[in-house]
Length: 166
Image (tube, rainbow, N blue to C red; front, side, top):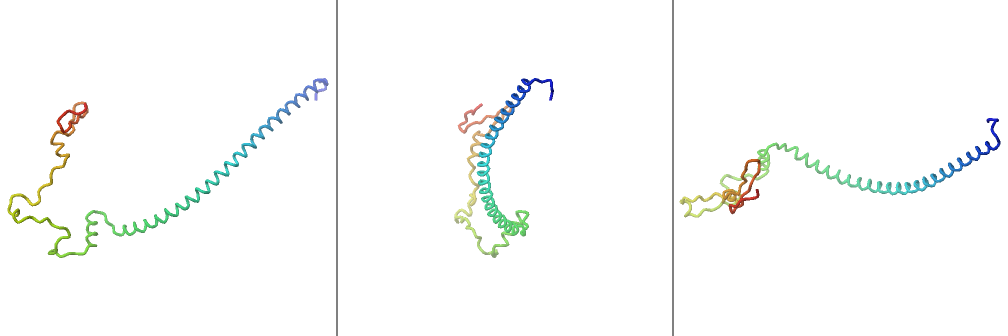
């Protein structure tokens, strides 16, 4: 300590230190109260989130068990399908036909045939005429198709022959 200081200066320095430490004590006491309140809020939130986590984990585990059972069932079916080794449509047809009972060539087909009248057998009209044209084919014949113009714009004509949007 400096011996040249007066008693008044020493008292003033001690009073300043007392004021500083009192303000620091009040500051930290306020922070302690704020932190205590925050700690209580976080503790409540933590308990709520843990409860939801446990509930969700239990539900996810139950759903996983259901999915695993389904996956095992699908795996068994896919193993049976893999043994077939069908890689083309023709092999698929052969496999399907192999499972069907065979029929003799003289047996009637499993589907009904169209019967043609006796008078039509010698006529020029075929017994199996071509199907009528589709509505879209008729629409195209009447000018309903897209027409391309310069600049990449297209215009559509309606069936009445009028001009479309430009």
